[in-house]
Image 1 (cartoon, rainbow, N blue to C red):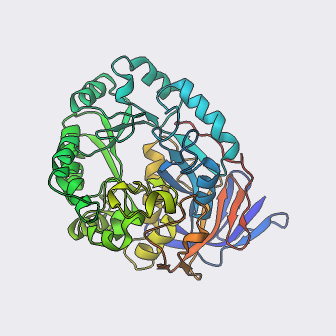
Image 2: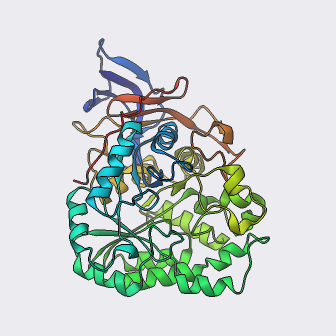
Image 3: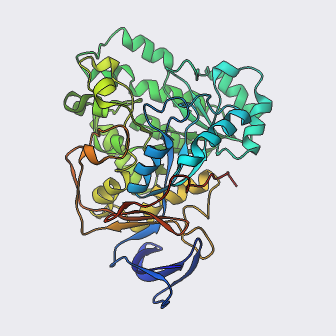
Length: 443
């Protein structure tokens, strides 16, 4: 049994100091609790929030472990205050497109996980047209939804045409679909206009604002479906989604790199900042930041995708650099430093964008994303007194690089607690044993 003393928690839009008693579940939350048998964790008035959830990661196991695996990925999560992750279906072999593949993946990763995890299912062109039965079976097996690409560079996970998407959505009205939304034809045309091998800023013109907005617009023609858009990078696409919310069940996420950087930063940061879709321009960044602040953005994820710095990212030909940023260890310190500590959002809003709204959207609430008596004892404890200067060598990911390298955050992660166990401590490091992480099914 453990007892967090002097925890600053959200109480509506206000905050208050409480004590929290827990084992694997939360037992009691009160202004003052005494228990002489409990291990004491003194939060010292720092924020204690529901364990953070990253609903968009690529941990690449099995099949692409040279990029990342579940052990290094979940170590990074634990060190970053993330108690639950949802892994994407596309970057593993075989991809999670049927129950047999899902079970194969679960067997491969379970022994390595340090934090709790769920799976996305996927729908790829490779399996069309006869997939209705396998989709329903995957849903019944507990995946949180189905990832679809409108453009893909993966032979093992082909993109779908808009007509194929419309047919799927009309036949599966009750399921949740997530989209990587960029228009393949616009990008193909833009490649004939711009080169980015030696001009990284052109990458944002090739995978353009209009490419993202066109794909979003075409997908949103399908009404009365449950739709989620991943890693939205532009104002135009975000506006389309926000305006459609009254007519359909649609949500969207963005990532720290879209909130902080623009295409101008690509010249300096190069491979460190290269991802798909790319960062856009100042107006896009400011609009997404405002959406985070005013509540229009549903939540933030990382799209974590690591790779080897020397052989895959730090290349003279920018066009050949791997698309991916290993962001899971830095997202929470960044968000607290940039938004909470600058008085741009409340602690309650921080909880929405880092756990609660994603947990609700993907069927993991209230055990994840809340702090209620009887729910999982998952906590992220923030240290507002300790600065974090980003040192790429200290990242647990196999990807030892970050666009935030050498930046200073005005806070750090004190502890990450998963189902009552301290999996990371700022003074002791990683404490969880591989295999502690539990597989979660959508409820």
